[in-house]
Length: 156
Figure 1 (cartoon, rainbow, N blue to C red):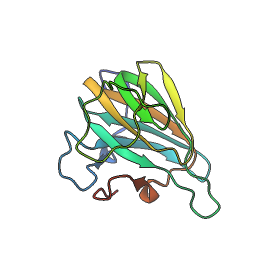
Figure 2: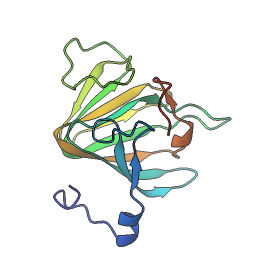
Figure 3: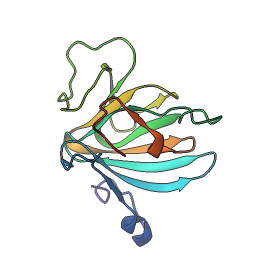
């Protein structure tokens, strides 16, 4: 997928791809693949790779001590992404409802070249379209180990 999108990775980056299944062992449905380019005290840049209809489950990025929760901008590079955030419910969502607990259904559809910013402490989940998706994430410091999942059966 990355080569098709003309996203070049070094061999070191390829060896550090993080495979996240949230403890469910059902990667093709629930999970994602992450390439982290940089994560400092101030900024973070990643690629999020999703297989067809693969879902990153509902979560939020909390404030930890004096550090405000992560603010992130998703930019769709390849494919399409169904993103769900807090706000008015979309009655007929386009995504396949995941088997994990979801409570937010304000649908944002990201086509290639489109982006959306998710503010700190905002519940969100997202799913790739039928051909998968690659999303560039630009954010403040990533502390994903502290993410709060709506579905308490999930682990990061």
